[in-house]
Amino acid sequence: MSVIIEPFKIKTVEAIPFTTLEQRCLLLREAHYNLFLLPSSAITFDFLTDSGTAAMSDVQWAAMMRADESYAGSKSYWRFEKVVRELTGYTHIIPTHQGRAAERILFSCLLRQGQHVPNNNHFDTTRANIEFQGGLADDLVVAESQDPRSSYPFKGNLDLERLENYLTENADRVALGMQTITNNTGGGQPASLANIRGAAEVYHRHGVPFFLDACRFAENAYMIQQREPGQSNRSAREIAQEVFSLADGCTMSGKKDGIVNMGGFIACNDSLLARDARNLLILTEGFPTYGGQAARDLEAFAVGLGEVLDPRYLEYRMASTKYLLEGLNAIGIPTMQPAGGHAVYVDAKEFLPHVPPEQFPGQSMAVAMYLEGGVRACEIGSVMFGKPTDDGGFVPSELELVRIAIPRRRYTQSHIDYVLEMCARIVDRKEGIGGMEMTERPPFLPHFTAKFAPIDRWIEPLFGSASPEETPRAPG
Ligand code: F0G
Image (cartoon, rainbow, N blue to C red; front, side):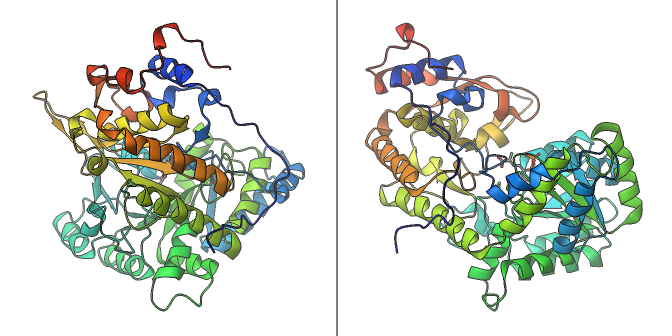
């Protein structure tokens, strides 16, 4: 069936803002062509991230009402701890306000100046937190991941041969090893169970503790169930439990597969690490039974960790992502293959071959999508990962992607159809899409606050009917 059945009915609705082309031109110029700097009142469909943007269920909202907001020893913490322990099997469960707080604490405890941390691909906050501690974040993803056309089913796999050599070469200089499930930076692609087993064996043989970045563990487990021989008869929960059992701990952002708007945790078996982590937690996050979250957040998070493993939910979630991917491909917009979990990644390098990497084709594509239909997506390419060199040069990212991240349970199939119609209009005008110049570059995580300008004012003729100089502001 081509109709996707959303396995929920709607109880509360939120109006979508609509803007005119004139308003979008003006707003975008004021935001220095950085979509992170736009007010949400100017966005019709927000695919900037799947993080913290989920619609919560009635059961989650109800659970929030029973929260115990005691400073210490809250009942909500014990409920949360029980759920996370049953899922992950780890002994120590340490709540944090979100994923990057878990990362900062973990790396503060385990990482010393000059030490390395391998991963399939580090997410940007993970890399930034490692580098901030004076460490080196190394990506050892399989080669297939660099080819957007390849439909290799497990592009989140670590290259185990490279990992083996890397650990031999860097013996005693590796603080911990990681694997990110799913591999967000590489296209929301899963790691196979066999590969995670292999990674655990290699890390442990070299005496390196193994941590999962488990933000999207349920989507990863579902794709293992669907794609990996011998796994189709197991539930996503059973698979996820085995995955967790292979590692020594994890960091988690509940804003993804916790289906909550805020929350995260560190989990581990090592009591000394847990002690150090809790000591740091108290400095910046809060007492160990809330760790930067309100008790009501912990309650909703605990429920979300169950709902995310519901087979009907996972089936709908993955069908939605695939529907968008196939729809884009059908109108001539190339995407990373195969469909990943939380997002579709447009291959801007291929779609806009006339825009060179140092002119940020991904940013150009994201800007075009906003101007065309008020749709907000996120560049994942040379804005995020390109590196200026000391001699004034620039090393671009391997891939120039635009991530259309799908918030959980928020948009329906007809919303996605609208996005596809809007994208079809971009295909018709793509020759007119030019490059972007980065006019201001912050030292860390540049994509959040960098400023841009369209090269040769390409936006003006392409969207000729708008005259940004004289147009009204958008509401809000
Ligand atoms: N790890 C991965 C793989 C992530 O995707 C993210 C966040 C984090 C860690 C950090 O978690 O936001 O709770 O601090 N990713 C979001 C995104 C921001 O849009 O992909 P956080």
